[in-house]
Image 1 (spheres, rainbow, N blue to C red):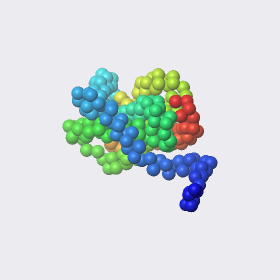
Image 2 (tube, helix red, strand yellow):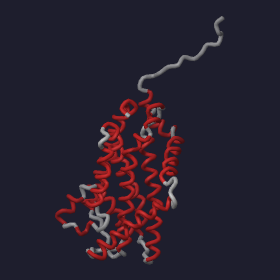
Image 3 (spheres, helix red, strand yellow):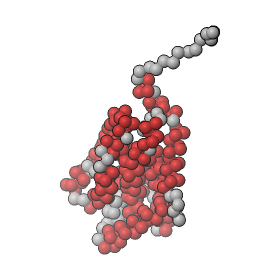
Length: 278
């Protein structure tokens, strides 16, 4: 006997997933929270001092750079205590470096989830960057402590700091998406990323001010997007003698925007193959 109640037809519309993609990012926000919180817990699990490592590592690096560049090389500090100069550059660099390391491996480490369940894959690298941003916020406590220790009061420029944080986030996200996508297809990138991070530390003005770079080379030096980001942080935090080299900053900003947009486009292009390749 046939059921007299008619059942609605299930229609699978071609391309629906593509059109709903950005709405799905919001629909899957709970998965984003879960992945970010899980990674925060796992990072310092079974360590004796736990999340304090987010303070110890940058603090020790700051001490080394202060001795080498401030005491031995006696480089200019832009009118601020040298430890504050160092740490105002280390904050955005540490955020960027951690984001690259976390993003590049994020898809591989979530391979089981990606190969079995549909969700916007963009959730995975975004959660990795957010975890690095949590470390960034924790490390900011050291900067506040240094300001209190040296009785250093920032100027009105500190109000512009959120703008430069957004630029640092875009640089981290754009580069991270490129590396995450490439690492799925070419596993060699798991060995290349640590080299990129280490090499980038030396060519970025973390331990010194970019003002020591000869004027004729500053524009070319700004082809490193993190130069503009770090200079922006120092301009906002140090005030006073800290100057923002506008042509170089605009060049770095343009490169950050290019990295961010192209990173999203390339990630979306490669996303269809992740489940098969991974």
